[in-house]
Image (cartoon, rainbow, N blue to C red; front, side, top):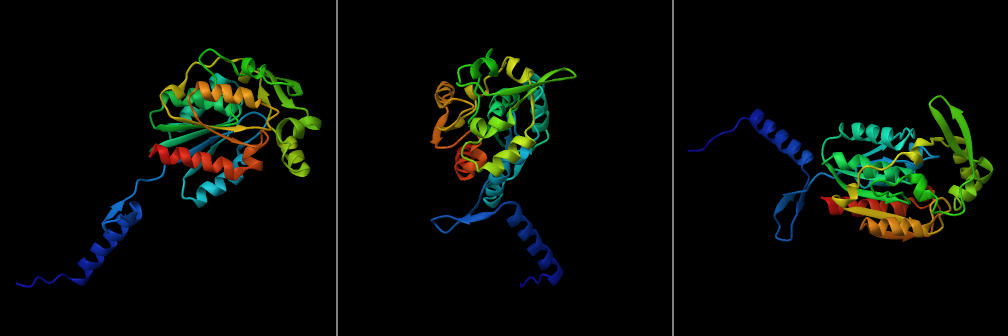
Length: 266
């Protein structure tokens, strides 16, 4: 007996099939069969001191082009303890796996924030601090030389410091053109001294795979210090000839490390 399907039912079935294809993209295997691919993890970017979320713009553009959902957090820069709580709260609003990326001081923040979030599948340090439990960013920074020329400002609740604009390019962005470096210096966000005095309380890299991009021309965090922290964390290490502002001067290198971590976490 021949069964006849109405045109309306056929259209509904076709629409449902398209919806399924959109939510779970299919790829052909070597045997000709089709299988669905897993959704890409959300990449969450955490900036450090004397920067803001816009510093990630060149990297975000590349990640989006490659199909990654991206978020860039406005790190409060008010102290490692409170900044960790802020980032942890932000992460709780994201569904699904996360690749958590920290630049500079942001590395200390992600080291602590990721410890309480099982959805964080990979940590990526971009010229980042990777403290051990009990260490402070200030204590680690003392191992870098020469010290960054900072200008302190008394504010309600403590003291904030920023880089002397006259020395910003040489200290932070040596391989960035002068105009861009001057703009970065003018827009820099100061950091509360609690960012360097609060002790780290967690070591998320002990349980979460980590990657580290070391910047060989860095004047803010000495490359040797970056190597020491990265090896101690058993991170997958890459190096690049770049200044501390590597996400602006070498966004392609930064993106590749993040995507390496993302692929390995799936």
